[in-house]
Length: 294
Image 1 (cartoon, rainbow, N blue to C red):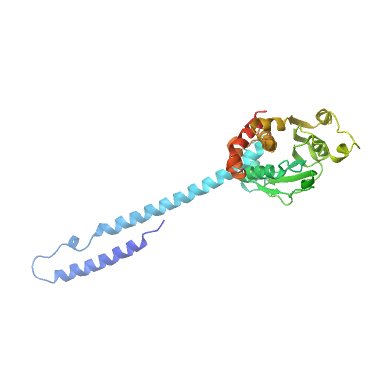
Image 2: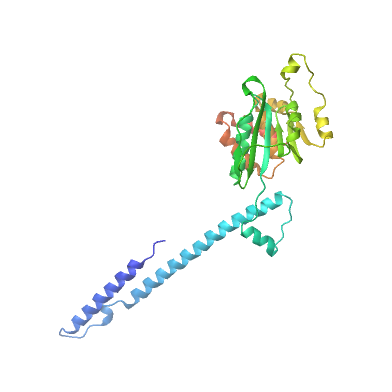
């Protein structure tokens, strides 16, 4: 806000010349003039009051801005505590750690696996968009694998307060999202002890199976569960075809993932708008909804 200091200066100047005019008029003939005819004594106090009011308003606005910023940071930290299943206690020690910024949000990892051509890149873009919108630092790796030859494809997504590397090591993945059942089994060593696996039931024969040198393993979901994994298995291909195209199975799994997170559905919908071409948006919205409700 612009402070009206110049108005105060001009008021002093006008009062000065008013006094000069009043004195000069007193030397003339006739009735002595009134001082109020030459000097507006109330003008200066009015301007001063106006200036003080603006200064008070500015100070109040600064306090409001500061409170809003602090409240946003506090809300974010409390939300992170809740995500980590901690009980928030309003004691002095915990409040001090929150206010001084000593509390650090844990870095979390997501693995997206499948076979070349199943849409790993789009899935990683959607997830990255959602996480960025929630204020996280996000790192997404490049695709690893022979994606043009139907080989295994792996994409890493890591997020937190500060992420320095996108690479996920064995035993680090909080969530594994798989577009193909055998790829799910291959990534079991990367899953955390309390991690979650979201997998499509689709089976794509690898080259050893195609050539007859090996057989596709049976009952993989049951074997994964017996190994202690928290597995959510859906027929993403069938749901995608129900939505209108088999190519949307990756978005079906994004819908399943959204139901496993604390992020609002509207955040996922906005990510779809930003990552999917407009002409395919409604189809993918349908695929997302089918996965979310699966």
